[in-house]
Length: 352
Image (cartoon, rainbow, N blue to C red):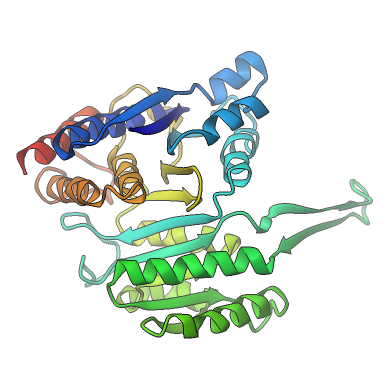
C-alpha cells in the first residue's frame, strides 16, 4: 500500500493533477498494486485566506508519505517567491530531496524545434544537485538601499552533498543501461573553488564504476551541444544553478513544458514528482491545458517506487497518445481537452 500525498496547487494545477490521479487509478488496477491518496490544499488560495504557506506540523505530516504528487504552484494574487520558497523549496530542503531528476526524451509524434532531430537523438537524463549551491540562501546585503550597496550570494558546496549527488548519477547511469556515459557539466575554468570540488570528487568516484564512461563539458558548451548534438548525451550531472538552466533547455528540445516532468528525489525518504510547467492561471478551468507532463510525473513516481513495469506501461500509453491523437504539441495545440487526453492515456493502459 503506497501512501501518496497529492498537492493540486494553483491555477491549472488541480486540472492536471486530476488527470495524473486518474492515470494512477487505472494503472494500479491493471498492475495490481494498492495505493492511498490524501489531498492537501496548499497554495495561493489558502495563503490569501489564512496567511499560512506550509507550517512545521504539515511538513512533518508529508514526511510520512511514500511520495508526493504536485500539480503546480503559482498564484497571480501572491507575490512571486512566497509560494515557491515556502512550498517547493521548503519541501525540497526539509525532506532532503537532494536530487532533481529530469528526463529529456522526445516522444514520437511530438514536434522537435531542432532541425533533423528525432526521438532516436533526444533521450537523456539530467541529474541536478537540489539542496546546495546558490539555492542554499547564503549571503546578504551591505549598505542596502544606498549608492554603495553590496549584495552577496554564495554558492555552498559540501563534500557530502557533491558526493551523494555524483554517486546517485553513477548508479542511475548504470541502471538506465543505455550508453553508460556520464557527463559532468560545470565551469571549471572560472569557478575554481566549487568546481574543483565537483571535478575531484567526480574523478575519485570513477574507478568504482569501471563500466561507466565519463567526460566533462562546460555549461555554456552543454547549452550549445544540447541544440547541435543532443544524441551525444546519456546522463548529465551538475549543480543546482546550472541544472536549473539546462533542464529548461532540455524541456524545449523534447517538445516543450507540456511534456516535461521532474522528480525531487530523496532515495532514503519521501520524494516529490511534478510537471515542470507553471500554474498557467489564465487557462484555469478551461480544460485546455496539456496534462501529459503531470501524467509523466506519475510515471516517474511509479518508477521510483520500483513499480517499473507499470511505469513503462504508462509511458507507452503516453507515446501512443502523442503519436496517434494529438496535433502539434510544440505549437501549443492538442486538438483535445485536458480530460480527453487523460481518458486516452487510460484507454491505452487498459487496452495493452
